[in-house]
Length: 113
Image (cartoon, rainbow, N blue to C red; front, side, top):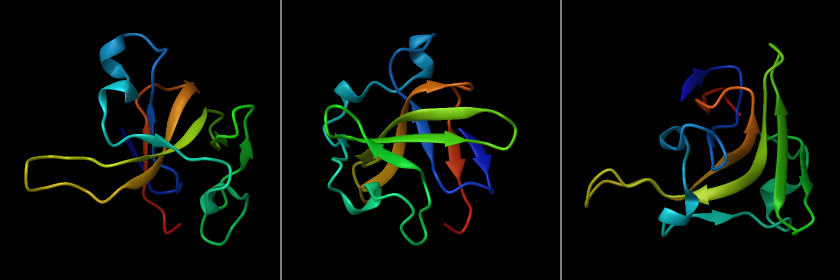
């Protein structure tokens, strides 16, 4: 992932990109879930999270994020828990699971949003 202090969305590349080792396969995770459109974070322009979101045809939360340098990422907002060892894991985090992007490395969004 690329550290970005100017954006609030963290996202990873999911499926469909080459090489396969550079993308995340959600089917291998027991804690992965896609946010439905009814989730509070899926409402566009809520305070502290101004990500442009919409409902896709499956009633899942879809995002499209465009950066100032012309790059973009789009996919679904998801919830995932990261486990580093048996005793160290994160709470469930909301991030983007990009199926289309101009850079497959992903972004670690670190702004105040």
